Length: 371
Ligand code: ATP
Ligand code: FE
Image (tube, rainbow, N blue to C red):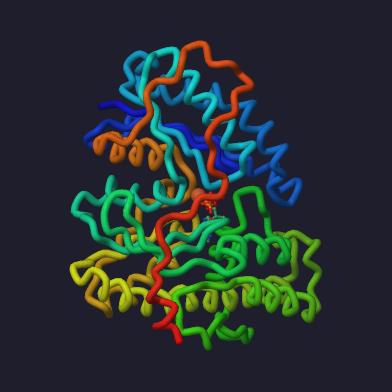
């Protein structure tokens, strides 16, 4: 089994080829980070344009690196949601074009399910049921994965995701955004004193597993405004005092942002064990999971509760094609795929996309437990 995975749900155009046994034959990611830094966020129309410019090249490169042609593929997997409709469409069109011309089955993949399931490629011991904390730019999810396609949502964000808070903090601190905000904050935070600025931990009074980062974002913005620093000067040319203040804010923000994750995970482990007492692992994935501080703090929480932490390598935590190909493989094996599209599908056809697509059912008893 050889599956091509295509991912275009947000700002990265990615493709990868993975074998049924989990061997990664190739992976290619083209990032729009430069565009983002220039415009300060993802503008759907511009992101679509950027995907259109590189999609053919990215897929061809994935085939070339794997020393394969389209005819060697067994199936094509593609993200159909959640994400930006315009962007998803670019990947889906490309996937259907290949599947149509080579008569291949096609698998529509849930982006967040892919972030979670890629851990089963990197950690072969990982069996259902397991828990997953999925932390990225647009999502903050705590789920219990009972089986393939059977997810219980223990918690989600009521406003922003943690990655969004990292990105805004980086922007307001005037950091170099050519990579993305997360890594810039992680690096600067190493120099700072994490106890120097007092931020309050979100949702202390809510005894559930939900998240909120909008309030922390505001606290950070106000803290930055209250200091006498010039954030228009790049960090590399800032005075040492200015640099220290910025590092202190970065470190203090990161400590509280992650403390919120730790507290929610503690409670979610309790909830999950009530539903599935055989849970042994917590998967942490999504872009923010590439952060070393996040990993080490959550590792302690997990160990304290006699579970094991599973974190994919950083390049498989941020958006990538491997996770899509692998999720395609898992679903394909269960017979969950669509027949090949017609070879002469008209270009203006309306695809079945799912820009909003919840992952699993909400844990209903959580609401009464939270009281
Ligand atoms: P979603 O998965 O919710 O649709 P996305 O696909 O845009 O969002 P991912 O690539 O999964 O996002 O994650 C990107 C996010 O991860 C960004 O907010 C980025 O700042 C954050 N991130 C990446 N690396 C790190 C890091 N080392 N520390 C903290 N955050 C990070
Ligand atoms: Fe993502």
